Amino acid sequence: MGGHALLILLSVASLSLLPGAMPLQPSQAWSLFKLRQLLGDPPVLGTWRNYTDFCYGGDYKTASAFVECYEDSVTQLHIMGEPGARPLPTTFSIDAFFTTLSRLPDLKVLTLTNLGLWGPLPGGKISRLQKLEIVNVSSNYLYGELPRGLSQLGSLQTLVADHNMLGGKLPGWLKDMPLLAVLSLRNNTLQGTLPESLKDMPSLRSLVLASNNLSGNLPELSNLQVIDMANNALGPKFPRLGRKVASVVLAGNKFSDGLPADMLASCYLLERLDVSGNRFVGPFPAALLSLPSMEYLSIAGNRFTGRLSGNASCGENLRFVDLSSNLLTGSLPGCLLAAPGKTVLFSANCLSTGDDSQSQHPSPFCRNQALAVGIVPEQGRKKSGAKAGVVAVIVLVGALVVSAAVVFVVRKARLPKARPARRLVEHASSAYPSNLLADARYISQTVKLGALGIPAYRSFSLVELEAATDNFQVSSLMGQDAHGQMYRGRLSNGTPVTIRSLKVNKSQSFTRHIEMISKLRHRHLVSALGHCFQYNLDDSTVTHLYLVFEYVHNGNLRGRISRKFFFSSQSHSPPLLPS
Image 1 (cartoon, rainbow, N blue to C red):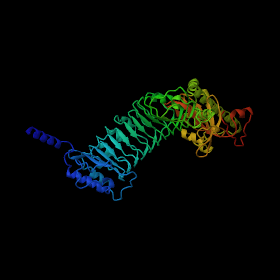
Image 2: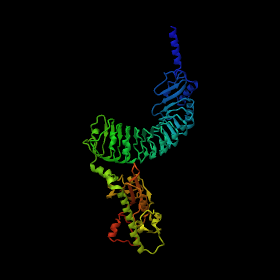
Image 3: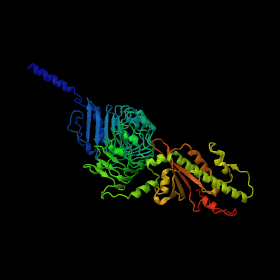
Image 4: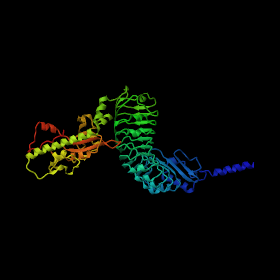
């Protein structure tokens, strides 16, 4: 009997030492009730009573509001209001709220969602909560920039502040948070480019910045496993990813060029890839369908090309595929057709499917659209080599130089002597062959841009040229040859232009040629207004060169010379268009 009594006594003693068995410190209990008051006594905290034992009693806990303790101190606080909660009254003070929170010094996990909190996050008050590891303040009305005080939370691993009004740039000091693994700021008003310091955060695994106002290229993201940047203005270059990436969502941005097939083919853990609603061009990497972990793949709303094969294989985990609104030809892989339990969308391509439920364009449509944006099969690129683009540029420069020489000779015979002229090549690179520039060495110093009424030569973006030609529609195509196409377009300011598209592989010497073209300006010449480079994503070499010229209706130099047509010095002669 005595042995049983001793056993019971030891059991009771051991229970008294269990974590959570001690009553909460009175000061911390007061702080919890003060928080309820500052939140306006919301219904979600209706079970909190003056006699509530937050640490040991469980009758007050609900799925939306509860406290966890260790010994006699609060370590977790979760308050989740109803979705769509309105902002708290103007009497609410975010400073007073976080001052009260700071009286819970052992707090590690904090959830405050859908409570109507508003105001800028007070960095000074937050920095007092040194043990915070997880913070979720989503679906409130917080605004302003992320406070620097967050960087002093050395234990913080997760920060979620979705669906607020936080603005400014994503700060570079995030790299000072050594344990931060999850950062989610979805649906805020962040703007500008992302800091390069993101690549210096080895612990960061998940970065969610969807639905903001971010722009520019993404930094290296090889350390991340989850990336969601949907619905921003990011691009044009596809980011560098690591082999352990599991989810990549880049839908609704401004990414262009092609997908890096080799890099993605090595991402064996990739489960989700969504690049829909961008400006991608080039061959679709069909190998994505067979990645072993791939479950969700969407490339809809781009300009991917390529001929699909009915024999292509699919990964066994693939459940959703959207190939809609591209320029794909061939046959849909059989593994997608006979796929119970899979959702497969492929409308608005040029596929031979035998499925009338998802309409397709005729094959010539995709070929013409691919031609309009300068997309050619990979074999065509290899055969053309680097020389084709270089020769095309030299031919164009030569035509301009000859044009200048002819006009100069005619005008010189007609006009009285002018003051000494200077050489056009005064500032040109000495790397040009002398015979290429010899015939263009005299152009009057008095021919200034303002006098000619010609806009200054500048660099155009691909977006501008796409807008000018309605995405290089076939209706804008004026002609083509072995080196590229010529399009007619109209800039945003109404200026009609001619755009020469050249397919090239290398860019080492183009800067010098463009420098020369930009300097050739005369009332008798069609002037170059600017240029645009389109780069290869893998090695940053130039894949396309676009040259933008004035648009005129007066023929070309060859036609003028063949008709032995010379202009009177007494009249203003129309300009010549280089052949």
